[in-house]
Image (tube, rainbow, N blue to C red; front, side):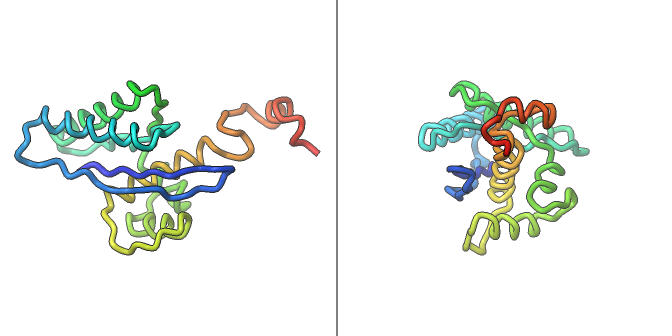
Length: 169
């Protein structure tokens, strides 16, 4: 399964757009599955025209075959974004949880409850692959769309003041 989540940011207001999962049929061979992932990501990009693409970095597990499959799936998703000219950013699972809940060890249920609260999502039934993807989107917003930096990483207050003279009183 591949989860995806989309948010819209307008004047620093974050609005939930969509989240869902792609169930990749087990009867497809490996390459057909990868093609389906690529095609789905490409369709989402065409439909929603996102400015950014954020993805959860692979976590290191004990099963090498699972890691290989996950890496391939992430690779084709990343390739679809890059082919569309969308910048890609990866986030570690701990970083995502930390930015959403304040706790890098938070459980999936806690992350979901925070997403519901922050984004005003009313639905109770959740697929965690979809909510994980939505958490990545919100984490990306928090990291790069701060009202203080307007999406640019700055080296300190001196650089902020020099680049934003109209915002200093």
